[in-house]
Amino acid sequence: MVATSEVLAFLVSLGTLYSVYVILSSSMELVYGELGLPDFAKAAFFAIGAFAVGALTTRLGAVLSGIAWEGEFKLRSYCYATLVSARVAANPVLGLALFFVPLLIAVPTAMLLGVLASYPALRLREDYLAITLIAFSEIVRIIARNYEPLVGGTFGAGVVDVFAWLRSPWRELAMMMVCAAFALGAWLLLHKLSTSPFGRVLRAIRDDEVAAAAYGIDVAKIRAWAMALGSGMAAVAGVLYAFYIGSVNPDDFTVSRTFLVVLMVTIGGRGNPRGPLLGAAVYLALDRAVVFAKRLLPVPFDVNYLAYVALGTLLILFVMKKPEGLAPERPLLTVDVGAVEEVRGSPSHT
Image 1 (cartoon, rainbow, N blue to C red):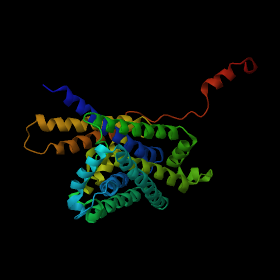
Image 2 (cartoon, helix red, strand yellow):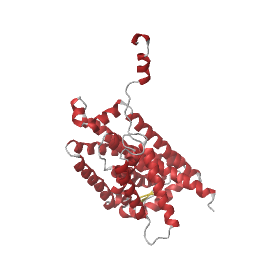
Image 3 (cartoon, rainbow, N blue to C red):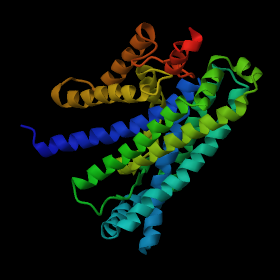
Image 4 (cartoon, rainbow, N blue to C red):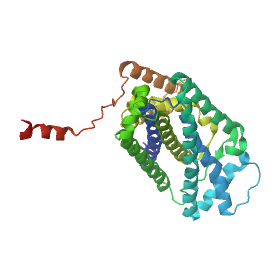
C-alpha cells in the first residue's frame, strides 16, 4: 500500500514539472504558435537558465559564506553545493539571493541571444532557419560540455538548495509554489499578448509577412521582440528546472528538448493560449506513465524507448487527424459584438 506521504511527494513533483513545462511551452507558443517562427533553439535558451544556476550558485554562495574554494570546479562543485546549502539552512536571505541572481543574469542574456537569433529569420526560409537554430542550440550545449570551468563539462555541476532553510515536505512544496507562480505569470503574459494588438501583429506576420510589411509593420522589430520574450521565458524555466533537479549537466539539454516542446504546442493547439496548458498536461501524463511502466513491466529492453515511440506516434496522429490540436485557434474579435447588436437594435436603426 502506497503511503500518503509518497502520494503527496508525487503530486508535488508533478506540479513542479508541470509548471516548468507550461513556461517552456508558453514561450514556444509565443514564437512558434503566434509568430510562426520555428524556434528550434529553445533548448539553448532553456539551458542558459540552467547553466546560470550551475555556474553561479555554488561559487557565489561560497564567496558570500566565506568558504575557501580548493580544487577544480568539476570535481568539487557537488561538495561545495552541499556546504553552501548548509549555510543557507541557517540564513534564508542567502538562499533568496542565490535564487534571484541567476535569474537576473540568465534572463537578459537569453533575451539578447534571442534578439540576435531573430535576424537570420529575415534572410532564411523556414526550413533553413530551423536548421540554423538547431545548430545554434548544439553549439551552446557543446561549449558547456567541453569548457569544464562553466558547469563541470560531462561531470556536471551541483546546485545549492535555496530552500534548505525549510524542512521536508515544506521545502518541496515551496519549490512547487514558486514554479507555479512563475508559470501563472508566463501564461498570463502569453494570454495578454495573444489578445492584444501586439498579438494581432504577430499573427499578421505569421499569415502573410509581405502584406504585414506593406501595412507598415516593422517585421524585424516585431520578430526581435517576440524572440526576446520567448527566450527570456525559456531561461526562467531553465533556472527553475535546475533548482528543482539539484544539478546541471549539458547532456540534459539536447535538441530533443526542443522537439518535446514543439510536441506540447502541437498537441495543445497552435495559436491558442490554452494550448500550452493542455499540451504540457498530455506530455507529462505520458511521461509519468512511462515511469510507472518501468516499475510494473519487466520487459527485456529500456522502457524509455517506448516513450519516444509513443510521443512520435502521438505527434503523427495529431498532425494527420487533428492538426489544430486540442484547443484550436479562435478568431480574435476586435469589436464588442454585444455593443454592435445593441446599436442595431436601437430605434434610430430600425
